[in-house]
Length: 110
Image 1 (cartoon, one colour):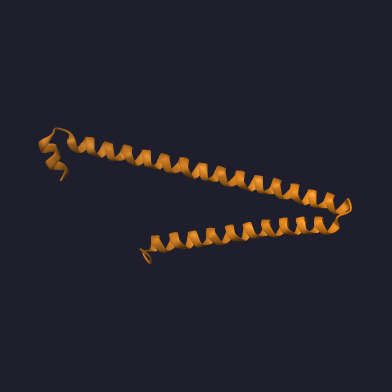
Image 2 (tube, one colour; image 1 turned 60 degrees about the vertical axis):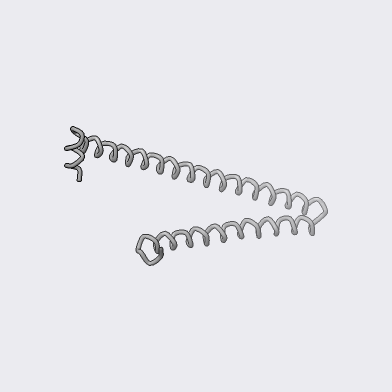
C-alpha cells in the first residue's frame, strides 16, 4: 500500500511514516502530561483533606475542653467518620476502575 503512495507522490511513504511517528510521540506526551496533572491533583486533595481533618479535630478538642464535651465529641466523631468514609470510597472506586481496565485489556469486556 505504501508503495502505491510512492508511485503517486515521490517519497510519500517516508512522509507518512514520519507523520505517524510524530503523532504517536505527540499523543504519548499529552498522556504523560495528563497523568502528571492527575497525580498532582490527587496529592493536593490528600494534603487539603489532612489539613482540614486535623483542623476540625483540633477545633473539636478545643470545644470539648472548653465546656462543651458533647458538641466536641459530635464534631470530632463526624470528622473522623467523614475522613474514613472518603478513604474507603476512594479505595473501592480505584479498585473497581483497575478491575474494569483489566477486563477491557484482557478482552473479557467490551
